[in-house]
Image 1 (cartoon, helix red, strand yellow):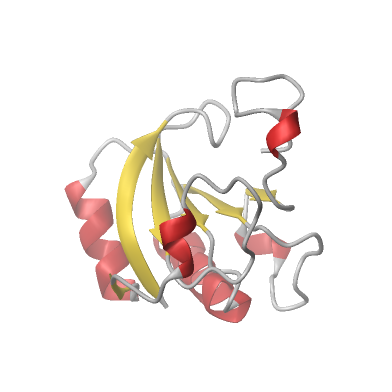
Image 2: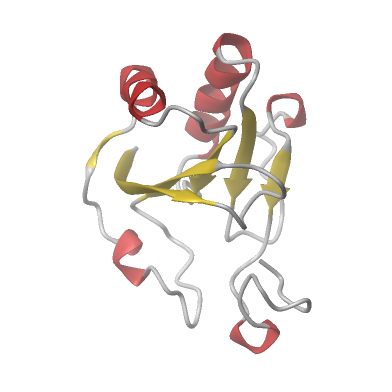
Length: 132
């Protein structure tokens, strides 16, 4: 699994300072996706060591959210389990474009999970009708 970039965000997880990790190789092809470049197989490997470096570089975060990773939910779960056990003060989130939660995801390791494709008619995060 690869990630392309990261960003500190404030809306994706309520009341958190979140390090959003944009994961490539997305198979969902949501209509109106604002990050369609993430469908490509690009970026750097997202390993436990890479997560450690990202956490060290981003002091002050209160959460990490995996943005994508639908091609390999078992690996998302493995990374979440690692964070859960090694960084107990961080909240863990996952944005998935799938309609159903993979059986490979163990809810115990996540504080937030958003399921479903982006639906443009429901608006962006600041719209009360959003599905995001």
